[in-house]
Image (cartoon, rainbow, N blue to C red):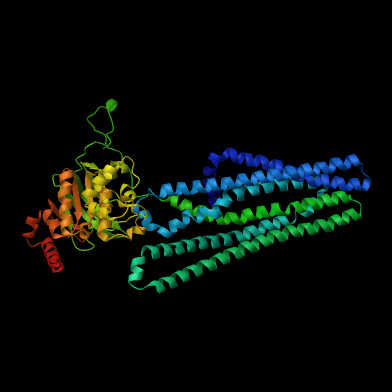
Length: 597
């Protein structure tokens, strides 16, 4: 019951902006119900008038009334239907926009918890027909149906209370069927949506990794895997539809039973002259007109179970608590309370001196970083080296707050970075990950990434700095050249340089390159560093790399091993001692020498 109340409260949030439109639908539904309840009454009056002998004037008035009521019923019904359809679309748009706006700002652990295919399903299939139709048409068709039933039952009670009481005998049976079938429907619809998420994930993974699949000739294996997933979805769809159809059929059966009861009991009452023929015909008319409203009520109960699953899956996204928190900026004790101003780190030219203070990072009981402490102030370039799995990428991801430390602090200019507004922090920090992810769009849009205030001059400046100018000149459409999904039409080096230009165009104060220069040849990398420090002399570069030229160029080398900072210093100091760094450097030097042969 609590879940049902929560689902209703969730929907009410989206109803509020449309409350006047919804109110109009309800008012029109009341009018339609009143009109619908009047038609059988007029019809009964005509039948009894035939038996009593009616005048021409009575016939004209009665038939004219029926035509007017029928036209009013049609116009009201058509107007209500188009208004419900419009609100279906508006509500679906609001569901999807608000869910996407929240998800896109969540932290990276969220995207590790929820698979991409699952999120796509929640924002498309869940929000689509199943929730869209229920949110307005399903609910307010049921409201209209309930009003028509109330008006009709009221008229039936006025005609003959005994016959009306007999007619509603199937209602408690219908309620019992709903209660018994409700949980089964929820379980089948929940399983169906979970399987749809699984199928979408399979498709996303197959297309994202198409190069790898084709390189290893795994097309048939992927086809078999997709066939199995699609077959499972088909079976789940059939199972859900089968149960829904059975429940729908039972609702129809019960109300048809009510019609039989009315025909038998009403016929007996007519024979015994307890009611007139007109009243009997009108009463049967009322029962007949209630067939579709009863179907609408039954459909609400069935479709609610399906929509409830979709709502609960969207609420699950909303309930996620991000690990990223915003700390209050500490106040300065020496300033009197009456004059105190909380300083926000938005200096136009921050030094961006970075320090790690006993930083630890853990994941599912496994330590990724342990007690890492160092500071960077005057050094312009910091290289991070270490064996595979030593925590290099984890360390650099802490600076733009893609992940949070489980203990310790990361400081910028002596202040905990958790006190920085997240948007401000990420304006100061440019980040280029190992995998250069590009969108299916133009090179221009991949670099600008929708950020306002950037011009073509900025674009050309960033491309030149990233050593991309020659490549752009080689494309027929230049910056307007479209790239395939994930940059599939470009080389690895071109993708990395576009990703680098994307980071540089905002002129960050701190530039993080996570093993990016491995995709650049030695000459391109040397040109990059020379141009970078000439154009942005105050920038701090933090580079994860094993390339010897990069390590030699660095002002400070940090060496990680099993999540611990074991060594730090300049290349000349570290290479002269028996260190892990010296063995790493020697192996890399040998690889580069062999690659040049």
